[in-house]
Amino acid sequence: MNIALWLQRAAGLDPKRQAIFSGTKCVETYGSFLSRIFGVANWLAQQGVSPGDRVGLFLKNCPDYLVALHGIWAAGAVAVPMNAKLHPKEAAWILQDAGARLCFATGGLAEAVTTASNVQCEAVPVCHGAGDIAPRKPEDLCWLFYTSGTTGRPKGVMITHRMIAAMATSYFVDVDEVTAADTALYAAPMSHGAGLYNVMHVLKGARHVVPQSGSFDEAEIFDLAAHFGRVHMFAAPTMVKRMTQVAKEIGSTGAGLRTVVYGGGPMYVEDIREAVDHFGPVFAQIYGQGECPMCITALTKKDVARGDAAKLASVGRAQSVVELAIGVPEGVLPAGEVGEILVRGDAVMPGYWRNDAATAATLKDGWLLTGDMGALDTAGYLTLKDRSKDLIISGGTNIYPREVEEVLLTHPSVREVSVVGRPHPEWGEDVVAFVVCDGALNVAALEAHCLAEMARFKRPKDYVQVESLPKNNYGKVLKTELRLRLSE
Image (cartoon, rainbow, N blue to C red; front, side, top):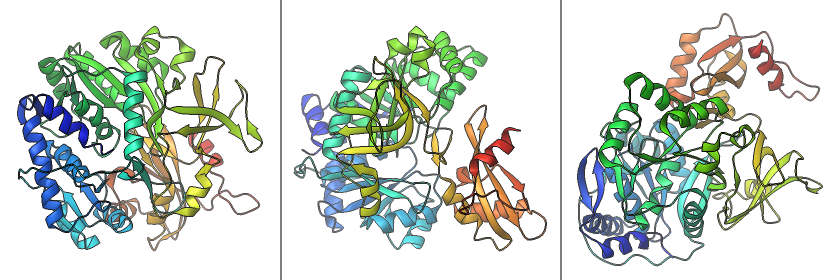
């Protein structure tokens, strides 16, 4: 089943219903939304795109993001969304690895990516059309999500139509209800979780609002929530914390916010309690990975609002369409024991794009090995004890040390480098690089080098010059020791 059918059904039920907004201005009804995705699908076919082909999305948040995404699906093609904050060289590598036929890009980004990748980059066409949704099987790909590991290049997570349908089903059962009276607000990047959550709101005929700023602005969010009412949004924990701080500063109650789903990083107990005290019982938490998108566990609004410390320290219980376990090489562990978090079910990926070795290392006997450590209590609540050791989560965005290290190592003055995360009161973590270099450390030169090679948000916020990196007997850098130095 092609997920684009959900839009066709919603449009058939009420084509005049308002669908997409830029700020408070309606730019598409469900009827025009549908005709525009057929226009995109027909245009893609004219460019030689066939079902199963990959089409990139290198767009900042904008109303046309939804048109392009559903138009790609209507054509039977596979969307390859990329964070618009990526460096053009990083986006180009993804497009080349995906074998993308073309890419929709925001003006100002298109030329650099086209030059770096030799992939045609275009604005989303403004055209209407008619036709049929391309038939797709549940196991066919609809979204290729590139996520990095702590080693090597980014990996393409293969997300199928079945996975998206399972995610939406679980959302309705385990996270929140959605009705046509609701409004989805896109304040987080639509290339990630916020964008994935559009499908259940399309299915129910809800409104979709992209802030005019195209970014996260707390006061703008509060104004839009008050205007539309019954607003849903996805937010990283750092966004929730900032919303609470700004709301108190400007005297906003957050009226109109109905559901804020947070995830993507650790949420401190006192921070979520403060948010609930100010905004009320509107918060729910999810835990997921690209390999099982948004769909491993959920902590309901009731659980969050109760304020129980143990539950708030958890990430909730298994969502309905997956099976959850804690494992070690010897087998599944009982309640209370700490081990690797394992998950299986219809929301789990079939594998990584053209990467059999990574797939074999991550999928074992039907289980997804998440790389995160945790424990389940007797009621089924999962508490994360640690995450993949080297991953840095800053502002809800994953930053992978190896990528930063590889860029720094291309600078002629750098002999060795190791990158770790440092606790940060607002962003959760920031990036620190320990550098062994020739001569005195030149921070300005390293900063300029990083900005020329990768996204700004990945660059180190601090550099520490060291004579040597601490290593074990096998020559492996002891990042635990580096983190200890930072804590001291």
